[in-house]
Image 1: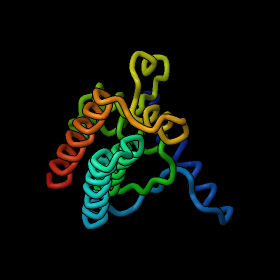
Image 2 (image 1 turned 90 degrees about the vertical axis):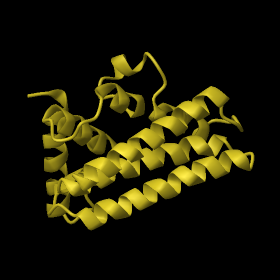
Image 3 (image 1 turned 45 degrees about the horizontal axis):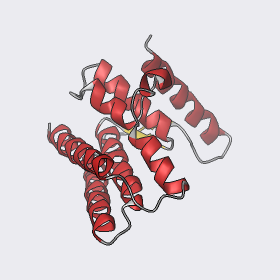
Length: 170
């Protein structure tokens, strides 16, 4: 069994245990596929993408990294909803996306997923992921994002959102 599939199974068990104990779930829950929920997440992804652009225009490009990350994350939550999952954990969401790619349920390039968050952190060390960019600019002291990184994150968020819309409509 792949690392992604093992992580998804762990996330499902984690959420089940938390719900049985009366806690909020911080894993994955299997639900009925929900296209309307997927479309709502897509609308939020578009909103976050526009926010990232507006942050940069108004001199707050450091916040663009977070907005672009959350645009991509909302896109993944949309895909999860389409396939009948609800996530309460970013790592579980990323593992689910990797698993859906491995199972050929979605057509995403692994390299594109790894630019957001890699399951293999040694492999991810070769370049900054959007998770690391978000953390750097959200928790760090820099007030603006490098122009090249801004463009890279913007283009990645646009690609992810576009691909997500295709997947939702399939």
